[in-house]
Length: 289
Length: 322
Ligand SMILES: Cc1cc2nc3c(=O)[nH]c(=O)nc-3n(C[C@H](O)[C@H](O)[C@H](O)COP(=O)(O)OP(=O)(O)OC[C@H]3O[C@@H](n4cnc5c(N)ncnc54)[C@H](O)[C@@H]3O)c2cc1C
Ligand SMILES: Cc1cc2nc3c(=O)[nH]c(=O)nc-3n(C[C@H](O)[C@H](O)[C@H](O)COP(=O)(O)O)c2cc1C
Ligand code: FES
Image (cartoon, rainbow over all chains, first blue to last red; front, side):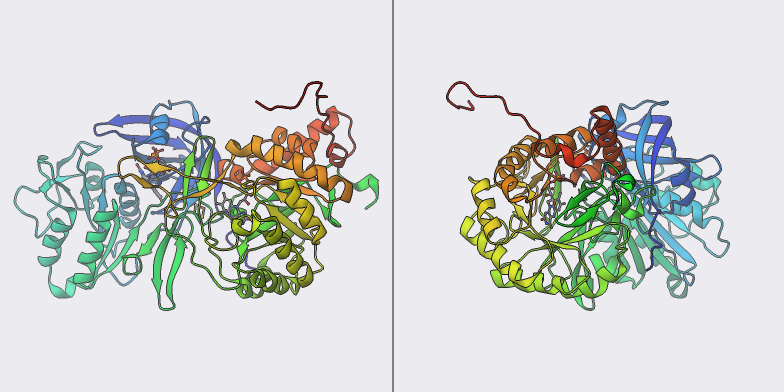
């Protein structure tokens, strides 16, 4: 009997260490959850009780972790009753949190140029993935972040050159710049230093500027709103590039018990319904779009 | 088991020695292993675990969204997604650890013949007992369509009875007028026990797009919102079960030891936990501990002494619930 799945998800009473609001209804929340921090991977999420008054949990991706300090950091947008209650929680209080959950992004050994695309509150897993990739000397990642509201950090001009970028597209996330990872920002809004347009349009400019041989080294990772993921999947198919996407669906248990969170996945044997919580949230784009 | 080593939580359910009166409910715990992902969770905290509803052929289930939170509960319309009985018996059952708890199959079908065939297949397997789901609100044929028709309910039970000698538990629907009358018919058809209740039918609407939120348009309501309904149904079914020594798995909105105790006092031998696991995956430990405390406080040697101990108010005037 293979029982390797057992004891892989932890239930923690996580103390809120900091909780900061940003424009556009965005919040960054850091909580003490040492067991989750220890085993979380890029793409993992937590299923948290926003407030004891609302017992059904909400899934939120992990953005950063510190194994040594035992915390995890989340970025979320206030959109409804759960995230509204969550936004009222204060440092010192505790959150009941289940995690880490889900299949992570899995960069392949043969692709040296990972392209990370995060839109809105789909940014967190991309930042986590970038953090993990920076220790891999063989990888040369490029990160594109998109948002229709001001970014939840102060964007600043990047010190790292990126081929193919239009003039003036220089804004980056300072944390990624500090990590030495090239990053550019995109928005439909007219934000300083940002590319005005879709993340996929900026990604296309980057891909087109590459030599064909190098382009074969690219692998795409994406998380964001469904239409954005669809556009990313299309772009990947057009350039014949491998692509992994992280999906969302309403969840009850988040441990694989209820089959409530499924997405249709195409397989050689025909369509099957896979659970976003434990079979995903990361899927091969060709199988889900 | 000699009384000296018996825990006050042990019960006998249709000849099966349950560790505790808790039964994990069908559809909430996949095929028995899913919750063991959570550190601290153990099937040993339960008397039995009911597997996901199983049909003869594999089913893809309904389109999303399949679940939605509602006040004090949730709607679900999974549509009996399952890999088909052959795969469950040949590939899933061998991976389960039967020393941890009892595993109960949950059988569904579109025809009486399908119920018979699936039950027969499980009869020839290590499964401990079989629950017949004639109350699923989320599939077009069979399910609740059978459960709400007493004659059809009895026919399904009769067919399954012919297919197995394992304990047969009939899962009753609350979406019917005379649940006790239906239970009586099922007992005569050979049911050994009952699960009371399955979900109530409900709906939620997105007012912006004016479409139902659930892909199946309607779904089954579970969780604390249905607890008072479930409790009354257990009380009603107990009235016919008592004389036949037929045990009940009381369920619907149990989230605490107090809830579980209410169900037992109303007449349930065992108590089902489903939606509450979504709130707290480690809830079983808390419910067991709470029941144990209650028994100590009331100087009861066994939880079985509680079953059906409800003392109704004597009604002096003509009955009217308004
Ligand atoms: C794997 C995963 C990772 C996620 N990561 C993040 C993240 O990092 N940051 C972030 O802001 N959001 C994230 N989301 C979306 C987040 O879960 C929803 O925004 C949140 O559940 C909304 O809850 P609410 O009560 O505020 O909204 P309401 O609209 O009131 O929610 C009503 C119900 O619908 C569900 N629901 C509504 N929208 C979504 C959605 N997009 N996905 C899943 N369930 C939904 C809710 O959980 C709730 O049960 C993620 C979702 C998934 C599945
Ligand atoms: C997501 C979900 C799936 C379910 N699937 C089944 C099923 O396949 N077969 C069945 O007999 N009952 C099914 N049920 C009903 C439960 O087993 C249980 O009877 C009901 O939810 C009431 O208990 P609760 O309020 O504790 O959840 C399901 C319930 C939920 C919430
Ligand atoms: S949320 Fe229950 S299986 Fe994914």
